[in-house]
Structures are given as C-alpha cells and as structure tokens.
Image (cartoon, rainbow, N blue to C red; front, side, top):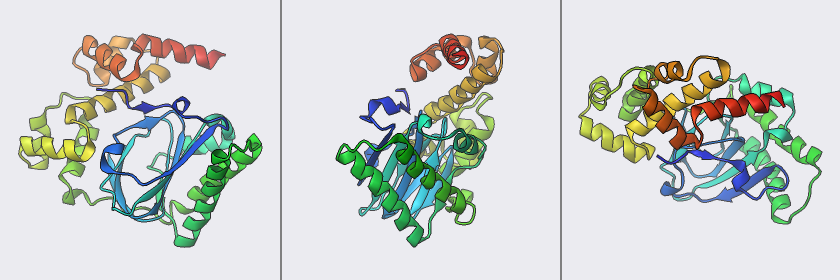
Length: 278
C-alpha cells in the first residue's frame, strides 16, 4: 500500500500556500491526508466525500477544512463539478487558529449560503491570482486572507451542516461504522459482512469501488493512525503500541508502519521528540 500523505513540499509554494481550481474526475482522488491545513470549496456541481470514515453528500458551496491526521476522499462527481483546493502551511497561521482547529473534534464541513459562498470564492480568487502571477504577497496579508477563510467557516459550520448519508441507506456506511468501532480487535471480512448483512464478496467489491481502498488497507490506515498518536503521547514500548493498535504481531506492525510512513515506529518517535525539543 502506497503512503497516503500528500506533503505540501511536493507543490511549488513560495508563499506558504498552494491553491488550485480544477474539474475533477473519479480516479484523481484516493483516500489521503496532508501535513498542511487543507481547505476545499465545491464551487460548481455536486459530489460525495468520506471524512474520517463518515460519508457526506456535497452540494455546491460545500466548504471543508482538514487538519493534521484528518483523511478523506471525494467521489461521484457530477459532470459540471469545479473544486477550489487550498493548502496552507501551519506556519502561516496564528497559534490561536491552530488550537481552534485542533479542538474541533467533529468533521469540519458545512454548506455555505450562496452569497457567502461567492464571498469565499472571491478570497480564493485573490490568492489564486497572486500565485498565478508570482506576486509576492507579504506573509501577513496572505495569512490574513487565510484566517478570514477559516473564520467564515467557523461562523457557518454549526448552523449550515452538510448532510451525512443516512447509515441504513449505505452498506459502506454501516461497514465503516463497524470497522471504526472494532479496528483494534481482530477483524475479518466475514465479521464485517455479517454485521452489515451482506455477502462478503459483494461487500469487498463495493467497498473497493467506492473507497478506492481494500477493507484491509482501510483497517491498516486506522491502526497506523492510532499507533502514531500513541507513539507521540505515551512512552509505551513499541510492542505494546502494536498490539493496542490492533496488529497481530510486532513484525506486521513494523512492516506496515514503514510502508505507510517511510519510517520505522522507533524513528518516527525519535524524530518527533527531537523536533519538539528544538
């Protein structure tokens, strides 16, 4: 399984942000996360999005913020779709904004009123034009525009929530609910299929088609995500973290962690300790 992290350093971004406006097709988005703050605004058409295992329908002017280990995937785009995507380096934002994002436990998604959506588009247009013409905005101005975008989001996301897909309408949603509740335990395809009352082969095929991941890959993502948190927040031995995260052996944990993060669990922990002491 290839790493799902899309780092900001992969994009040409002299101003600590990168912005794009694209018409997207189905193969473009795999399940992924970023090391930056990611803001998306669907400015035309509709689609679906899965955020941290929850499925959402997105009408025009659906607005999303992803932070740290939030992971997501877009799919089922309408033919007329158009999506603005902005990635912001955390260094561009004040600590108060970062703490607010960190303290918001729910999925950060809302559907803006049309006129508000147009206002957000105008701010994104300004950042896009600066990037396109190589204008070197003062960091303070770029930061101000990005803070405005986040402030607008927080003003609206509780009063204009985006609709979740009703669980009983989706085999995948029920499977995600079960997996998210039991991924630290031994899990088999048959266990999950029994819970959602579905043939195992049909569940496997449907899950892969919609998520662009196998069920095994998705479970591994959740387990690695939990392990990374434990590596940072505890001093527990690596072996204990492996079993507590749901892996059946230390060897399996080390192999999957290295494959996804390009680092061993021990190196990951050491690197963060060094970074936090600098």
